[in-house]
Image (cartoon, rainbow, N blue to C red; front, side):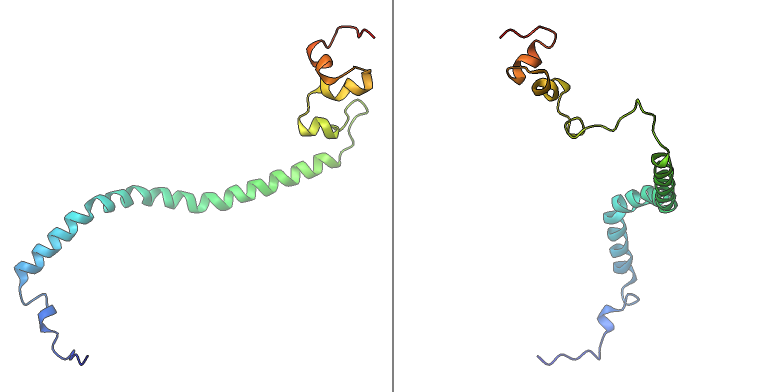
Length: 117
């Protein structure tokens, strides 16, 4: 392949101005939808950029406030949740062994009924 790049005159847009203008019109018509979509996204992007650091700063401040409130001693009546409670296990399931229920289903279906043995 021995190509010569010395003559680029066929690429000159001034050579055929009507053809060049027609090409520009077709290109603008094809890109009109995308340009309209980007015109709407521009103002949104200008608001999002400063909003992200502000959200991060608020999250850090909220984390600091939570860390300070956890350092305050809780009253004796408020207790930390147990493992089962934190996992979302129903209360009736957790007390079945302590209450002496024959199985967890009895405790769930008849929680207030006395057990018969």
